[in-house]
Amino acid sequence: MARSLVIMPSETNRAILAELLPDVVVSPTYQTGAWRFIIRFGDATGSDDNALVLNRASALATPDLTAKAQEHWRASSLRYHKPENRVTFYKRYRVQVFDCTAIYMQRVEIGSRRVRVIRPNLSRETRRVSELAWRALYTAGLDIGAVDIGLSSSGKLYVLSINPCPRFNRAIGAAYARHITAWMQRMEGRGAAGPLRSLLNPQENECPQYLLGADPEFTLRDARTGRMVFASDYFPMQGVIGCDARRVRLGRSGYPLAEVRPAPTQCPLELYESIRDLLLMAHRKVPRRYIQWRAGTLPFSQLPVGGHIHFSMLPTNHFLRALDNSLAVVFLMLENPGAARRRRRSYGWLGDYRLKKHGGFEYRAIPSWLVSPVFARGALCLAKVIGCDWHRWRYDFFLRPEAQVAFKRADQDYFRVELAKVLVAIRSLSSYVKYSQEIEALLNYVEQGRRWTTATDIRRSWRLRASSRT
View (cartoon, helix red, strand yellow):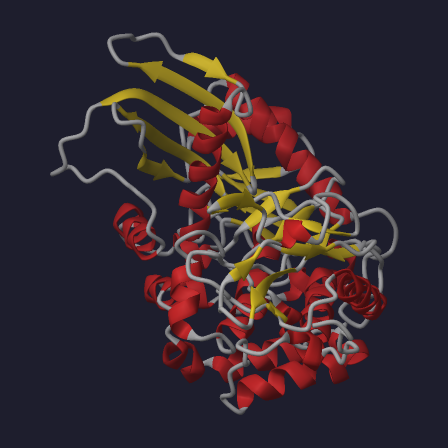
């Protein structure tokens, strides 16, 4: 790890990390060198080019980091404490965050001076605190640092402050050192196609081997009445065609969202074919011609649907930002803006992901691309390309708070101004060539300013045989 640089302005912290990371250069400022890894606890000078970086110089380069972070939090609707607001916090947490992980948590309760060390996954409350701490850094464009969170007497969580260069004790320093070492080892990868090797050898087009999966959702609608039909009337909860766990009550209780759950595979086109086979199987289970299938963004008021895509690897902030700036922006340009705004009240925000039991994660920011085969193939192939080349992605709309506001408001005009840069970035990725036909069919819709049509039965666009029963 001799080509690894950790920038740590604090002398005390620097001494701790230097002892715990003997093979890493720990410096108070940037040093010129052919660095493979750069981890910035401060200092926005120097270049991040040709390195894998945590806390980019571009995110740190602001005279008032707190004020800038608050702009991002407002833009992303994160609740944060304003001095003029009178809020009593009966618990305060300090969370040390490294990339997507809360690595160390401390808690102080009202009326006590005792600082307790708490496991970040101890309870639902600490998991909520961990998620908010990560989002506070992520939306501000940062990857590592300390986040202070307050729990009010009404049970609401507030971001109090962030600090990319927090004060350490040895236990906190050891937690950072462990995760720095593990992150570098993971980035070096196993075999020839690790992200670091790929970054250092751009002429090599070998993609890291990982599985791609999906569980896109759709709803059922009675064309005679316009009312929702419960998916659970036709499909079981479990299985390759099943129901999402969200439950509603319409005179009676039921599960309105259907999901197709194909087996994961390395090839996005194989995944697409599996989805088509499952849709045909599902079609045979719903032998009513008057029942329409709807996908897209918001087929029914207050019932958003998603096109979740699974990756069999752990997430990184850089990976998530690449997905936000490519997949999420492309599909935003296809959506009905009003429906997109309402969907983001529930989920589908920037960086929206969930860890899965298979050891990877699902990306949840995009709507259900089951609207047509063109969108399904395009979504899966573009996801595959980003999964292969996320470490090469450099363009980031969302370093600007106004871009986060525009995304939340589904302001397509804002993104159209610089859309060409995103499309150039996508087409420049080494894995793009292999799936260019499927991705271009998707991007053509965006370049032509067209929106998808979600008011029709998706069985028509998928050319599933019409039912013989009425």
